[in-house]
Length: 280
Image (cartoon, rainbow, N blue to C red; front, side, top):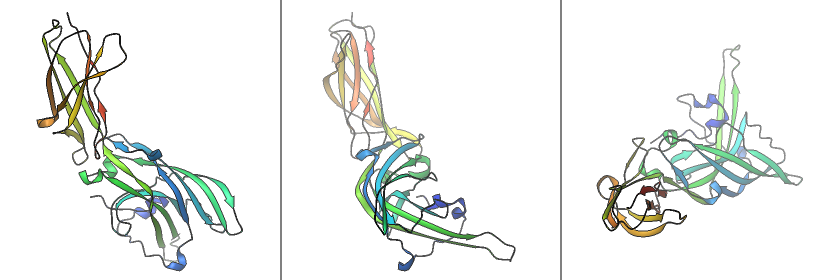
């Protein structure tokens, strides 16, 4: 499991090995309110093994009017975590790019802003085990740093605190990406003869950084006749060892066969590209 580094977006200096964030006192805690948090437009986040997925996050932030957030000495944003707020099992933290915030209301004591940020979900950095394919929670994050790098007096200092509020919103599902292949044979084939349609269902394995066979899963075999834009169901096939798919059907006309996987609570949907077969 990865080492948590909450708030590292404030400054590269915060990544110094061995530094421990002191607990903020109640007097130091700003009165921030995060509301209306929506992650990835309310949709599941599907992640493969290599590509970084950009995840949009929108929220409303109400802060004291005398608190300036400059994203240099302090930072506010939304992160994702699994586990509990007091015992996080994993986190996905804001990037060093500040959120875009627009003031929507002010009072004598508060400023309310509509904010948008983007989480960069690199599977190699954030996802390491099957347990990461679950519902994650959102938390508002505020971090601040006091730093004195002037060593002319023989002394430097670095003080860092963070506050987190959560869970916020309804959470978001992170799923493993799936892949499907298909091959219909023999080709060409005489009308009325038997066609064998094989394929393979795999899904992202974040522990190994590869795609592994997904067994005991149902995939729909579909057919689209040449000249048509619509696929129709043929039968349902269950994946076997290594995610293998195999079934037979009768050749009737030229067209395309494909497998379709609807997805599960931990794995995204997948559709194979249609494989054309020539019926004579």
